[in-house]
Length: 357
Image (cartoon, rainbow, N blue to C red):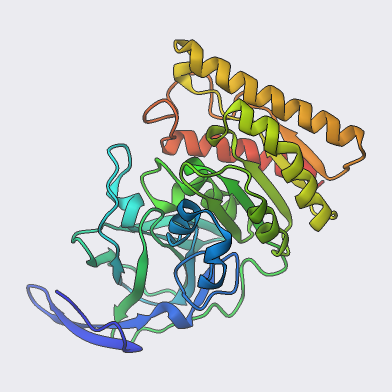
């Protein structure tokens, strides 16, 4: 069923076996949106149209995915539904539809975020589904993560008639500068089952700070323009996780200049350089193992050089135990399952906390 995308809200009627329930849908454009790296008139894309010509085409195209975006709201609803419009062109053999163009709802309970429901895409473009129902009607805060690998042109959240929904009166993330994570398809979210399981999203909830996801599938290549964009964000820390998209030659050419540029633009903000994860298949594939080792050695050399030059806010995280050593953390030997994302989240969280002591 297609629906109007221009109204502030619409009312529809749904039917159960014994009752008639009205659901009021609210346009989320007026609500708090976490994860946006730049001021942007196009609500659900990461970069504004004004910088399109400054980016490589694949980076621009991927920036139209609202990866890491989360609508932050408060409601006393007993049931929450959603309608949203997505693109229809992206299909991956190793990525779930719930990550590509689904929604992911978390509720705040006793100071911690808990998974509350998933919006399963059920149509090529116009999606509509119930996220959670049969709740007690308590007032609580919610995070609704948007699709990681498709566009999202509109988003409406529905609650039962008489329930309230508004911007949170007390901001859970207040007083914390955002964390910025730049990297590859892994940073963007592949291959978590839901948008909220990508490791930047997990860090957002665990560290209690907004997190900016600058993951670009196949294109985390230490582009100079990304250093400029990142420096424009008043961040608590920059996490650089580009190893999987770099050949040794690219790593050799770009690592030191990128880190120097970012540091020069924001000398007071810590930078964390993360090694390329050791893919489980590298135990058998010697070419893969050699490539990872070469890239990581270049990272080590770059880190040592820049520290010797006096770059104080540069930090380093080695690949050891980032995703575990049992070989069970990926879908295809490179892109992580929820288990892999949970493990790397814990490792990066621990490192960030140690830096910030």
